[in-house]
Amino acid sequence: NTVQSVQTDTNSAIQSMNTCREIAEKGASLADEALHAITEIDDKVNETVDMANQIARAAVEQTTTSNEITRNIDDISQLTQKSQERVEEIVQSVEKLTEQTETLSKVIRAFKTSTV
Image (cartoon, one colour):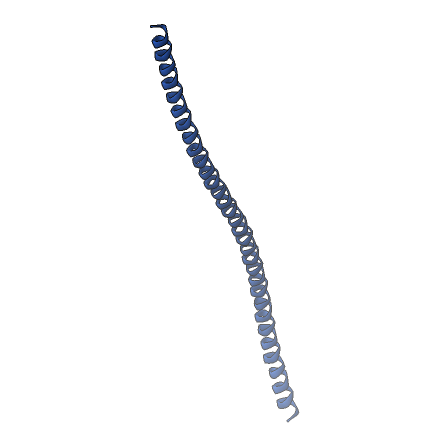
């Protein structure tokens, strides 16, 4: 009876060890799957970080370009204002020349009529 008890206990121990081995193998398999999933997540996170960095660089470039456009528009506005001032000065000069030409014409006519 003792031999049978030892055999029963041994069989039970073997079954327990087999069950533990199966559980360990499943655990190892799940650990491999988890590692694979974590690796994929890490890759996706890195891709997302790269995309965010590209977006940030593009935003900086657009801001720089927008600032440059704004400066150029300001420069054009100032040049336009200066050009308008110059045109007004030219118009005034032309008006003065016209007046002086009319005065000179009157003087010449008066000189012609007085010498005749």
